[in-house]
Length: 364
Image (tube, rainbow, N blue to C red; front, side, top):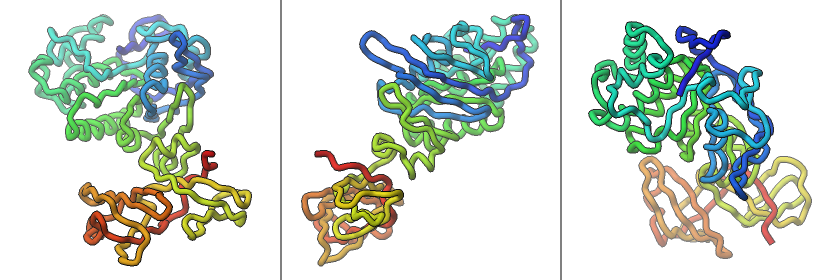
């Protein structure tokens, strides 16, 4: 759904697409005993693509629906360019939305689907045809205008849905897991196309996904939600390399938990190896060190104290599972070209390649 209004309440169909600043201020929304949003504060900058990422039930879809106007918060405000739109009806918000299920009209062809909002707003037929052709060309379907949804693949239908969402030149584009129903190759291609379009149009975009790869590869920033609260909002690299909480560290990517002990000199000792830790730490504290699989190095060594229990080939990388002394099990990612001697049953030496990602208190 997309609506662009002038001061007189008329559709500004010819307005240029641009980015708006979106703010969530203290949003709370509950469904019976379940709290979907618990005081969410979040800002989306003009022209930014922000991904809302988290497990099922974390509140990401509710946040998107509140922004779209399909849900109203129990408390808190939604602002677009400083204007409070919390109680503005969905059909009067300057937003375009793309759903997971495409939601195309089956009795309309691609051109008519794209132009539907323009027709509702009274845009002349000639201009509707021109705008629909322009958008179908923009999404890579210049020759599909006469095709009906049942005559198009899932990826093509989603491109038409995207074109329809952009028809009225919204300032905000909302994407509700738009790629989850597509096969892997189409999904990868379409996410690149969506990002290209978003950058070329400069449109502020909020993207809901449960797919970490999508979030990290597409977004300017990723907001990780958990139980209705914001855990961290940061650029993808910062989120991955410097997670703010244990939840983010373990939810984004893969993580090992290794037992360690803080030595009091700014280091943590793991299996006899001392590594630096940022910030002051008390001595003698038992901790767990969270380490990415790619930050472990594994060397085949008949005298090593680790045993390879399994090896899974993923192209350029091989994922190893190893047993360490004391019953600790770890995952390590090594270049496949170096994994020849690291087969199940092989002895190996495991070392830290970089400082740990995060140090947390060991559970009692």
